[in-house]
Image 1 (spheres, rainbow, N blue to C red):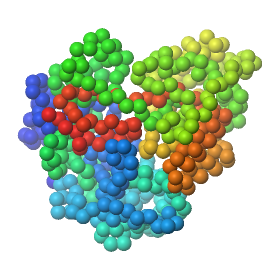
Image 2: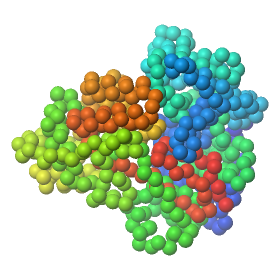
Image 3: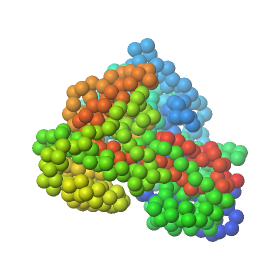
Length: 516
């Protein structure tokens, strides 16, 4: 069974003392420094990046990715797709047991239970939208007008059948998300909401200790020679403190760089003798969002295009972080497109600039983007457009966006899976906030048609063509102004080998890491 909290557990005490002291690092233990909070260790609540990373170690879904981000079986040993592409049958692995329950093996009924739990309003999962409009009967069950999800069945203990409302070429990608992970029904029924404190999954690791917001310790369930045996996640207030801990030998991996740490690494490169960087471009976008409704100050497309041209002149990525990010000329990352649409904007008409200057625009952003916002403010002022800045914490900013109370904001989007549809979802008419993520309130039938066509298209390259056409429409209507594509950056001790290098920021499988 999962260990209860308490200092009486001597193994945990020993592990913690190793984390806090210098000297020789513990063999087989990967100690990771993190800075962003996590919301839950229950996969149906894993909506933030760190929660996704943690739940990936504890749970498994039917499908996963290999190192090239190709779809491969996970809890399912294989799958079959019907000729009309509307029925999927998943044949589950045999003898796949749950953490703390070595004799309780995966059954098809567990998958059915887990997905019903995701959809049920009682659990209020932020991911309950996942199969909405995709699996037959999902919405009826979500609204509690049906007692079961009609398109989800356990044919026997080892076969799950899923019926889709229509062919959806990206369905298997959805199964890689934590929301679709399999949980142990008995544990959920016994623990209820406390399941997040004692999670039980099929993943390579299990939870043995947690101090919420400060420390999470995971232990490998089945030993694997040469691979990491324990994962220790510690939270630090800033990267400088974590860097000092890395120097003292108290941690092995540090996520991300900030201005101060980047300066230190440049000033003295002696650290390269005992540490190294992993730096991988991400499938994500940092952007300015614009309210496109006619009632918005930026409701006129000519004004949005003029503002976009002025922002592009600021060359944000090249000026602020030339070695850490890539300038964004498209909203959809270039790797997901068949071609890069021409993004060169004509110089804005002076009359449009004058109209922009009279709007008294306010840019809303999280405090973490202060440097970016102040730079944009100064750059636009030089071009004749004054800009106010108001900083809001994440929940407040989301509330303002859902209510449609702001016209210009700074936001980010990271891909959940490596397809352009992941980004186009933000602009779909049916997904307008607060129902969905379309905070731009864009409603364009032509764009919707290309989004739907991409979901039906089974050929990957043909989907990229559709994504490129959709990107051209985005550049014309300008619901968002792309700023830059970020990079995943990790500072690692040289004892750490085989660390994941993935363009998908949410994908961090640590079970193959080697800690010598």
